[in-house]
Image (tube, rainbow, N blue to C red; front, side, top):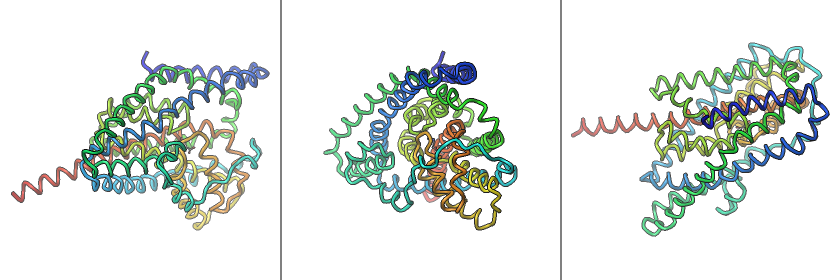
Length: 412
Ligand code: ASP
């Protein structure tokens, strides 16, 4: 069986095992979760995080040194930011329109599951922007902050090009780091099915599938919103002749990991490998765009935050005025770019969106119970959005080089 099939099978068995435990052996849930499922799941998440920083750092430096000039790095960044903004705007629209049309929050109440005191406040936007600049490169690597790692690698990558020959030994050191950590990743992936099994069955055993039925309309429409957005991306890729089916096939292991771990960061090393080896995306684009998108691009979170805010407004009978909708749209758009790629990040960021829109934070307690489940497909959406934007950049670049060639041949 291939790795992706094994991960999917493990996920299915995990859901079944968790449901049986929850329904028939409630007294066993606490010890099994405490001594088996949580330690195994957390160990797997930690193992996969172990390779994220070295792989992003080395692949970005190698990718950048292969881009012949520094100006091209800037051009990639600008084009990506433009396409991120357009597609995130669409994602925010999908979440908001869906919630306004289907009105999932009307008549829902009394499913509080967490103590609001446990939710940490998220950072302000200005603090977040300033914190992207690391005070030293080793600190960036140590902290594991993906944007700081990207910032350091991009700066070092550009300097390597300017230094020339003198940087050769550093580049070969980075090359061997990359080879070593790619091997470490392939070893870790052998235990991925076990990790995914433990993570999923822990959620189902402790939360139970019943919770979904109480918030069925919330979960169902969020899922539908993500499916709609994925459909839009596939259509866009089809129009760009970018082989959407081949893309989905090559991403099966990465998407199953994204669903099982609910972490874009955890899926990153596998996306980076498969998008080049299986799908065939150019190395210089993949090594730059995929880590950047993993750090910034969250279509799933954009859909969720807008949808969730309208849901909470409906639950508390708060009228949806134009200014409320504008406040929700803007804060959702900004928050989607600063949500970290870790499980449960969406819950923390909800405080920012609800706070900015003046909506009651108590709503979070109601949706928190299903967050781990919606987080799975939200993360799948995040990964597909990230990868699609990298491919859009690739098409944009090829289109531009065709135009340049045509212009040169017309002139000569
Ligand atoms: N879990 C999501 C991710 O890793 C982030 C979120 O919670 O919104 O992409």
